[in-house]
Length: 223
Image (tube, rainbow, N blue to C red):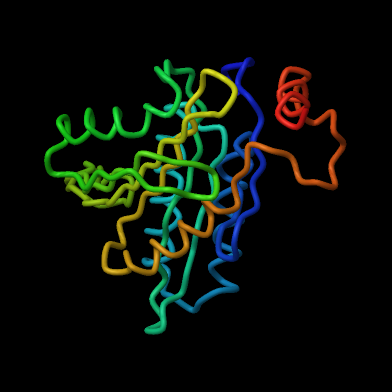
């Protein structure tokens, strides 16, 4: 993490999500995706190439923005089509304001800034979050695919912003896909992935996985 003061989080991913080693050589990473696609489907070379290149381009964009976790998600639909998405986590130091006010305040700000987006405040196991869904036009160079010219790809992005319960940070959960026709299915999978995030260590981990400050807060809460 670039921010060494950022708190820890724990993550348990559902089936279909594969965590990406952010320090891995890009060539090795793309080779592993090829192996995964070969095991999942008999799709043609062009479809596989498109999936692999799209995944790497999206990953590089997430890394430039400071992602602390990225997972690739590949799902085969009932029709046999391979659909792809990217699930990323960012921890950002940010002023939250008065306790409990962050989600609604930010929702109002984002709704004003992005009038075409769907913005709501939703409750999850992890806490209350500002959730935004919007479609974005992303320019794509044809040279990446060995083709002349360039074009624009429409992607749909879901972003859920969770204020951290005991530090001045916000956890941003971002899911992006260009397979919009499968959005209902993605919504279920992304909800399951968010349910696997926790600001607290599993019960079977040592107590010192939490910071001393947080252990003191827990002791005070229970007397």
